Image (cartoon, rainbow, N blue to C red; front, side):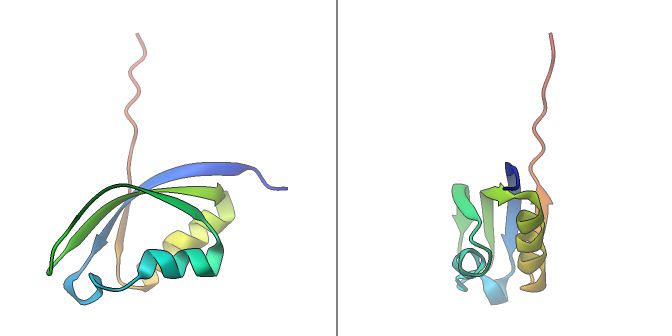
Length: 83
């Protein structure tokens, strides 16, 4: 079985997709677990911080799916400061 990983991304939904169930569609298609960490959505734009959990390859496919649906996908970088 492939290793399970977690990746955090920001999804930006443009006006024409803001009411579409794209995250649910992604789950149905790829079975990638997701956790909505934060969201700001109105009639013209949506910004969602999403944590994805699953096989790295499947997560990559899910991210490409989001892009194919017109979303902007940006990684959430974790800044680690070692002392």
